[in-house]
Image 1 (cartoon, rainbow, N blue to C red):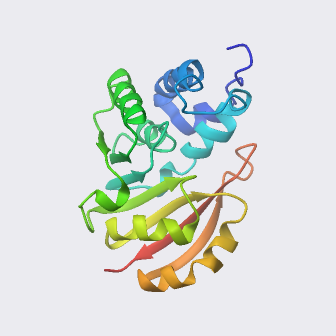
Image 2 (image 1 turned 60 degrees about the vertical axis):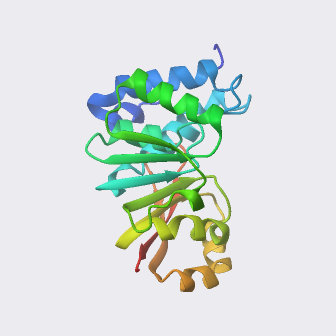
Length: 208
């Protein structure tokens, strides 16, 4: 535990009166994440910066009902549910051991705004159910759009956390963008001047 990253100053500002829940989740991930196969051994020194705050900065983009595809360790789903208790979250994850972890954290943190669903995205069976669909580090955009766009209600949004190649991924996904009737597709860079590492989010409006 000695090599876990010290909590950055930005954390308290992002989480406000929910900071203690964010700390509890980060501590649990630091203590159990590697042994349970949720995070790699090199992630502890950058757990706050690269994972917790990288997820939390997206919170202001969300509203209504949100689905997080491939929630895994709870990044971004659990983090966002902590930051936005006014938003309803459905965390969708196919792997049983990760589902167990997610349910444990929902219970431990008392997150009444979270439903955990064991399924692949294409098996969810809730077409056009969500105001916003998000995902982080799941797959390339052209692969991710067929999994996420069908879950978004008419006029709802995608908010997909991406890396440095986000713009290139949009270029490579033009066929899927057209097929799923996405408009206003863009990359937004969040956290400049606030976080040590910025977050790139691919945003788009979905039309049924």
